[in-house]
Length: 139
Image 1: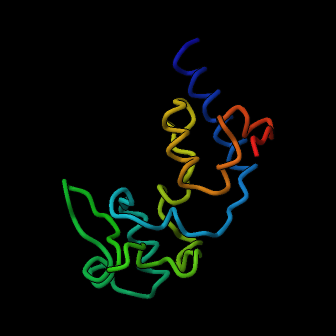
Image 2: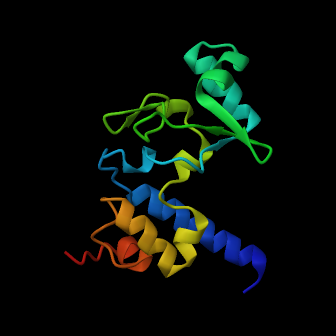
Image 3: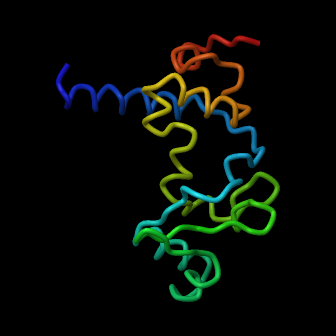
């Protein structure tokens, strides 16, 4: 299978997985320092949504590391924008948040699926991505 076809197939799997997803509003995905990096258009969108100047948003909610801007977490380990499992900036949330729990590695690699499954209650009943896509629960 050519690279273009694989990408097309993976995109279709991603779209189906996302359409089936029923968030449990637990907030586990909003905990932990690390991967919520922002692209310039997201910085602008979130700043505007919060009605903050760009520099104020960056100073208050972000940190820079390895040449990227990231949302940093509060003292309790949760994202600044997480409240009771809900995202205060949901309509403008960054790409990594919109994609969770269906990052490409979760869709192509069983050990990565296990990581997502063990951290997301909505995925916990499904032993594999194929089971999830087919609605085959293991509980």
